[in-house]
Length: 360
Length: 236
Image (cartoon, rainbow over all chains, first blue to last red):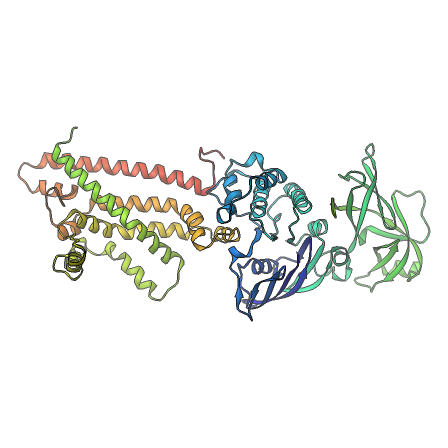
């Protein structure tokens, strides 16, 4: 699947001018609120009409201002999960899920059952949207969009209106869906956690324009973008090799060593993605002893960044992975940090970004 | 209280007139309400004012205009008679027409309000699920406007039952044909010793209105609950 977007649209004083391409898997449109992310997905869905440009899905042109093509929303075959769910209040959950079937040849029973099973909707089928919790509503909305058999699924901040607990719950279902049903997804979010956990490709949007596109590891690891929306750090794909149930610890292997982390809800052999923030990494020239930090990785300084507000980001190559450490300029001078220097990276915290990354 | 055969006839006629008035005007009212709520077209203000005319004009004037247009020698009336053999003047169908026109603005107002209160985001959600314009209207807009439609139907029905001025001017006061409940009560009050009978019919009118109000209240409440998305039994 490929999605090509190259559009321009004026919305009052705001100007949207966006061009990017997205491939398989989850593409995150990431940026602050008000950056124009929702306008972009609305244009893809045909709800907002760009002034100029072109939108292609799998080589099928759904919008082209020059050739006068503007396929209407119902014919675009795009599933859309809105921020507020937008379930039909006059229909119960079952009818909401079957809604898309009204306008096509109906939903095959096996597919209906599969989606209901996947999203855990069985007990909700006879309820009405007014009596569902926020998380339940979003699960139904996701199911409803899936059952319209879309060739592309748009999720516009589907977790924005949920509390932290519900967020985690729905996020799990979204991950399941991503891995089970091979529908390409465009995921709009301003949350680093969600993007790092879900995305394969990240399109960074600021003030209506694309400021970076690339693999999640690259874009989310770029510390020069920290000013725009998020904190720099490294994203590492790893695999669980050992589970210590007694201490609630898991050992992850990655291309460069191992990490010991807590609270990993994954089986041995399962791929996971972790994120290590630059500010959680310290640097030592000698391997320290008698220290509480569990993860000490030997590596080589690859790059010393420019000073910004008294701190410097240092890139350390650990095996095939690049870690980032945020240290003070004084520490850089004091330790004589320079490319090629052998150092030890002390990792204070590792957050699990994504369980079940890649194919299962 | 048992009704006499004559009273029964009056009641049946009134019901027939009011029910037909509502049934025939409903689709037009929905269309006009939708146009006023959703579309922008030149002359919209004038159109809006025209629809509301029966609400502000003296009913007698409306009846007189109908008589001029649809009477046997009127331009529309003679055309209908010649080409289709349809005559409404001095017939119960004419009474229904007058009742429908007088109730029309009330119906349009109620339905328009509920169209305007619908969250249009639900309509765009429906279109992403494959619904075209007609599909969206039938499966989302119309069901969500149901409380307003029921209210509009009741208002127009009650207006039709009580319609007097336009009816008597347009189709006169013919027993068994155009003498509806209000016309019969009026006639009795003009008759010596008709007071008791007038009172009986007035009581019937009161009862009828109460029943209609009650039924519509129940229906509106149920529809509103549906539209809010609560369970049918009111569970939260």
